[in-house]
Image (cartoon, rainbow, N blue to C red):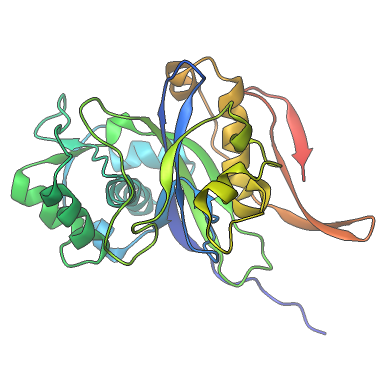
Length: 285
C-alpha cells in the first residue's frame, strides 16, 4: 500500500478572551457544532477568509513584526491571521479590538444595532473591512498576544492550522454569544468560565450538562474540547492573573497531537510546555 499524504490544513485563528476575577482568571468559552475542529466547547475562532486581506486601518505591530512573533515567514499570511482573529472575536463575542486612533477602543456595544452588525459580518452580508471603514475605525492589533500554534492531526479529514491569540476583555464592551445568524455559536451557550472552577477540569461533565445539547450532555470537557483548549485552561489555572499571562514571553512553536496506542486503546498524545508559561516539557494524553 502506498503512502498517503495528509489533507492540506486550512488557516484559522482563535482568541482567548480573559479577565481577572476573585476566583481566578476567567476565559470566555462558547458552544460550537459537534464536528467543529475547534471543539464543541472552545474559544472564539474560525477559518481565515480572503476578505481578511482587504485593506483596513492598522494600529500596532506591522505585519512583518507579527510574522516574526507568530514564527512564520509570510507577512501577508501573518496579517490574515491577525485580522481573522479580531473578526472572529467580534462575530462570536461582540468584543471589537478597534477604535478611531491608536489609544482608543470603542465602547457601549450592548445594542441591537451592534448585534445586527455582528450577524452581517458573520453571514458576509457586510465585509469586516467595510464595517470598520464606515465608522472610521482601525484595528488595535497591539492588544493581541500570540500564545500558541496548533496543527490538526494528520489523519483528520478536516485539518486546520490554528494560531491562538489572547486579549484582556476591553472596558466598556459587553460579551455575549452571537444570536440569530444561523452560524457557529449563533444563539447558543457561552459564558465566562473560571479556570479554577470544577467544570474547567478535563474530566468534568459540568459544562456539557450545562449546555444540555444532545451531543454535549453526559460528556466530559476532554471529549468536548480540543487539546489546545484544555492545555490553555491548565496554564490559566497556574497563572497569577491576566497581566502575568499576557505579558509572559513565549516562543511560538507548532504543536500537533499524534495518535498512539496504549494498552489497546487509541489516544491522542502531544508534547507541550507543562507550566504556566515555563520551560518544563511534558507529554499529555
